[in-house]
Length: 195
Image (cartoon, rainbow, N blue to C red):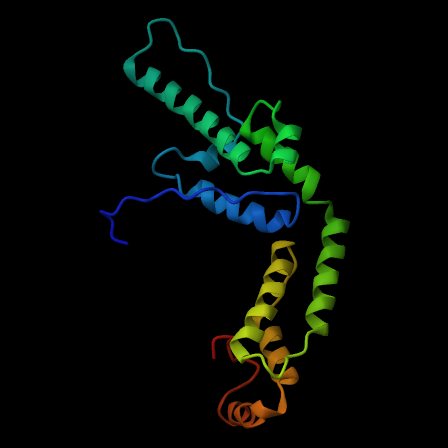
């Protein structure tokens, strides 16, 4: 896409109460796409107040106030559009986008103990994975990477080298020759997931 092509807004991802961390990451990216037009993410990150205009305001002050009001309203409307009807009924009386975001975060993100337990369960799921005979390396790697990224979203470290090691250890015998070739030509501790 060149710089002359306008950005076409996509519908925001809808949150239904599950996988908050994935929705929050997608929603933040969605809101940041409005950087040049409305800067919606700023209205969520900062709970700024729109002050009344002074007596005899200049045109720049009026435009700035209207822009800041519109940004806050659009951010709130975007959050309202990005949740299921059940969740909307819980947040519809909240006055600002900042407060809506924080309510959802408090309600669905969980505290450090809960996030730690979720990460531990995902790591257990990762460790239990075995490559099926019918799977390709790419399909298996994508499944492992998906689990690893969920762990990362919860704030835990998870290196790509761990995924590579898992693939090399659990790959079926039909890949043994390819793995032996990699062992002879590459430093397996530094091999990337793409390789």
